[in-house]
Image (cartoon, rainbow, N blue to C red; front, side):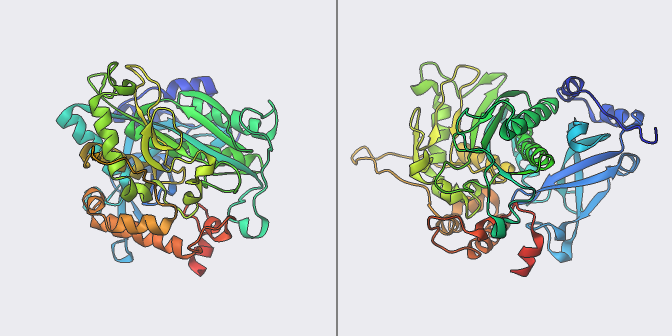
Amino acid sequence: MLKNFLEIPYDELEEMNLKTLSEAEYREYLKKEKRIKAVTLCFSDLEGRFHMLDYDKKFLLGSADNLTFDGSSIRGFSQQSESDLRLDIDWTSFRSLPSDIFGSGKVIMFANVLNRDKSPYESDFRAQLQMYANSLKKKEGYTLNAATEIEGFLVDGVNAEAEYETKGFSLISSGGYYHSLPMDRLRQFIDRAAEAQRAMGFRNEKDHPEVAPSQFEMNFSYADVIRAADNIQLYKLVARQVANSLGMTATFLPKPVTGINGSGMHTNMSIAKAGKNLFHDAKGKDGLSKMGWDFTMRVLNHAPEICLPLNSSVNAYRRLDPHFEAPNQIKVSAIDRGSMIRIPVGNERSARIEVRSVAPDSNPYLVLYTLFRTGLEGKPLKKDTDKRDRLRFLPDNINDAIKLFKSSDFITKLLGQVNQDKVVSYKQAAADRSPKALGTMVKASEVIYHHEVTNQVLWNRF
């Protein structure tokens, strides 16, 4: 045999990936395991695009403290004059990959982005989220927890998003909620993707077709906020990889087809201290503690200005349509699915809030950073007892969301002026590529110029 690269059965792979070892132990494993051919390091840019670099194992072990890349090639990162950025490996994110999905002999780790002087890069929100979570852990003893329910669509053909202008989208299933047959194309995709996710340590809970035809959702367990955000990026990567291998495209456009339900990323959040869920109070309204309600009211108060990070594309505002269970109302409810925030039924372990107005194409690190900081540091929503409540709605187009985000002093404090300006710049460029009025039909521009669509040639020609 000319090649002898590592291939691990799924049950062993899951057991391995559920363990967390020290940096020294992972280094020793890489050193001893001769059948690993490459280590994939991944990071996300400001808009949430997922980037991967493969390193030779021996080179990585010898140069782990001096890994650089050209930041000027990454939209939302360095200018050309400050091109060199560094990668700082997060060894706790180490995972071995299923060989039938990613190729044999592959492992993956996440990395934070550093400046030349090894200080954290301000536009890398994985690093910003990690620093914030660590500071709260040290100062207050808090552990930030999250889990997301990520919906997507399966469409026929490889690279279907980039070719949308000439071919459009062809859904591969006409069924809806639970209607998929056991071995049809949608079910084959869900089965393969869910199996891979379990093997990667996601602790899957359930997987199923969603309400719209060709729509899917695979739910996985709660985790600390960094691992939860990493899981979002890996979830989408696995879905795209599996779909591609089956001759299809997994798309996380929030509303790829009009007339049917769009895709969301319902974001469940709670805070724990010394193993106790601080959002739970059996005697509180809907089982939520005062801390949980205060957190919720702060998010609601700042909802209009934080809408852009949570709905970061032109297409995302099609989803905020009240005809399709759209969570566009700035209110909280235990039962009304039109509410931006829902309070699910929970107990001392599972009590949480669910922010339903998040789109699946948003940057998960930026989303969680924004929501947790807003919930803990924002100003609470105060009700005027002398006046009847007036129902407020989220922006229904990206141009209005940009204006609210751009003019917000709270956003400046939250993200910093540099990041606020960068987000405005890139989102305004995306908005300018599409008509201001969404209209009833999805426009090619909102698909082919989407920040997650791999079509750099088109971006450069616009």
